[in-house]
Length: 581
Ligand SMILES: C[S@@+](CC[C@H](N)C(=O)[O-])C[C@H]1O[C@@H](n2cnc3c(N)ncnc32)[C@H](O)[C@@H]1O
Image (tube, rainbow, N blue to C red; front, top):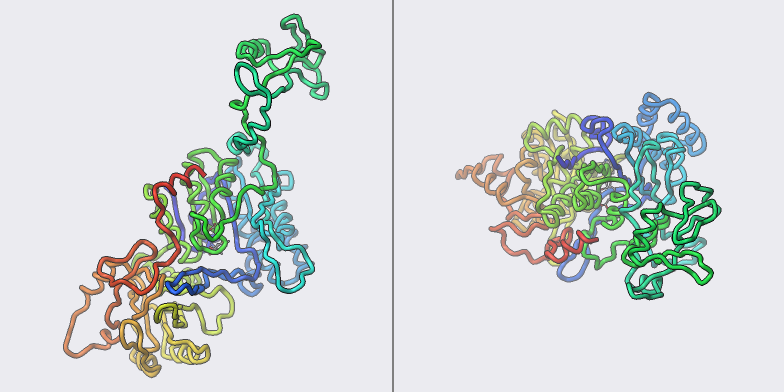
């Protein structure tokens, strides 16, 4: 069964993926580029609001030390290599990145079949270090290629004088699990265009166009006594014919054997038999996704389907299992499904899982898969908070339509929401998540001061249980604010139950994924009374739901804004074009 996991890939790999169960791994981890990737949403007035999707920064204090310890326990030889790197790099962000990657690559080696392949997509920032790490994990003899992908034909210039060439390529390191790993080069031959075929096959006879090719082995190919035989009065030198007698007769009968004036045999090669050339390790023929590309989803760092299709075709067969542990908006998953492979995708960003689900719904409606890791009830939400606070934070912030901050010092900000206040206008809310069992009024007070400090419009405090009266009082002291759904508390408290039901903050975000059904269920549970209870005050009236890219819920009034541009529903023609690649 195809699987989509929400969570940190290290945990998912350890707990959910069996040893030697995967044929092909493609991974495209954040590059340590220190960039913060944004997702773009288009508004009707043409302004673009940028949303942070994930932070591409690794820090030593975020767990690199424990990653090093895990590596030491897993494999001392690999640990020594990393120690040597650490001697040079110190406790830098780059070293933190390498430690985090290594511990994951060790797990990936565990799940890879002995005939499996791994492709690590990175860039020159760290590719040279990653190659050392990969050599230590998979063995230098299993290194197969450093593929250079031309990801930009028009590298960005700078207004300022630059002291280097503009970076325009990515690096893909290809390793085999062992020498038994197959490579299906026939599946990825570079076919010639009709024009190139015309130019190459420039001679013609009664059977059509052809080009001269050899039928005799060259001296460099060595002697082959079994291929030395007489045909039509001609006996070749000791290195022999290229084919056995039976095949030679077939070639001749098909009109594909010719004799030169001096009596030497030649083979006539025909365009219909042209298998194309082998693909080299420089990939300049797969364009990046431009702003007009049909497959463009808007997820930062989205890779082209053609790139993933080539990798998957070269290193797997239909029915094989393809794993992408940093699956982003699901390009590998999409390509694997198109090529009839089974697939496993993992991502730690809730937004990524939403985008992939939407992508599958729009482009691959017949695909079957199971999503794991996303809490479906309050119990599961509490369990997630206890087991993995960071992933709980990712999920909780995603549920309120925000983007989570990465790991590391958060200065009281676990996430942010950009909400719509009018055409092309956005408000900002700070999100604070407390996944502990006992939470009092103090963190609510802290959130209030962070909202003031950050000059944000409102604050959202997420906790597991119903707020205590003290917490409610503290939130109420934060004042009121006018929102699209009416006047609301400036500091709102959201519980695990709210997160499951579909939180209603009284704001509109493009990422608000509350479904109509969830809203209807929440509506039924509401018991109207004359005097509002504290519970009623806390919950406030529901806002019409909106779904991510999948069209508007039935009872939702039209919004004065475009739908998000995350996934454009494909036409049948687009679907077929994507399938053909
Ligand atoms: C460069 S993007 C992948 C893009 C992808 N190849 C595509 O075409 O859409 C890297 C992804 O890794 C995810 N990620 C980062 N750390 C992760 C972790 N520890 N576990 C799982 N996913 C992670 C990020 O959320 C992000 O979506």
